[in-house]
Image 1 (cartoon, rainbow, N blue to C red):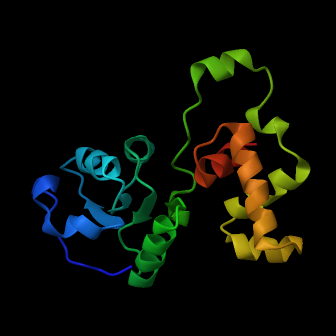
Image 2: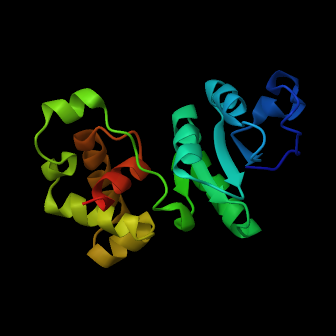
Length: 181
């Protein structure tokens, strides 16, 4: 992945020249303007979006997730963290600053809540809950594999099974669903 150039987000997306080969766009969100339409436009073009903002709250995080953004960092993040997050997002992961772990609560579908009398993560195996618990603590796939003394592929398999059982769209949602336990 290579950095092409920066673009003023007030310019319409269709006029961004560097967008042709972009995999990830790092978008700085400012409080007085909504980045959500830009996020939706980029996501609709198959581009991953990593949002940076100085201030986050449950509403802004929820809007970003709903719009399809794949990463959420506090603006003061070190450049190395931003680059690592961009690579992770390009690889299909959802990235979430540790400082924001308590801010985003994924919405539950009303029909799922009405149809179920048990917690959604009660259907997980003990190992799946254990894997998601380690990821909730901020461990990477490789680090969780080391703690559990299994391969990273095994950790990914547990995550994949947990996603389907929970109906979660990504690791972040699954981790947050289990974290609430």
